[in-house]
Image 1: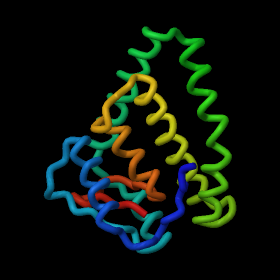
Image 2: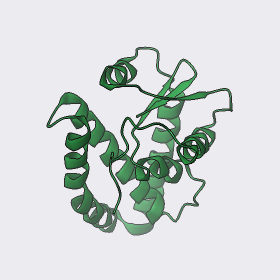
Image 3: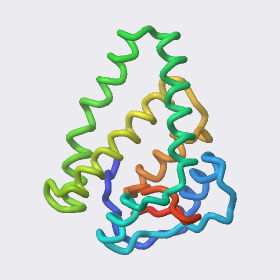
Image 4: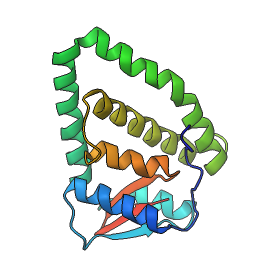
Length: 163
């Protein structure tokens, strides 16, 4: 079982930093991007609302998602692909939401945002897994952070923020 959001707010350890650096590398960032833990919910809110967030990570993930969806649709057909993805979603989405509420407050705007981010990470990981992508794939690396109980918030002014 995945420890959804179990380590929110806890100090980063060396494994978190390795996982974060691997994810950044898969996105195409170099080592100049600083990895920083959001100190509290006000910093989370500021991070997700920052008008100057770097669109590279978003674009790389969107392109990867679209490619995987297209290839899996061609390989499996729409009906089988949706069945496989739905099976995984039903098993985890409620657990993701409940964990976000435990970590960020019951049904708060931040808990809903975290649950959405977790569900998206789960979906992307399911796509990459179905396509048998290697551990170096961007979605596999992002999911490693999520598996560690973290919430990746994005890159803002050359700083990768997570909680």
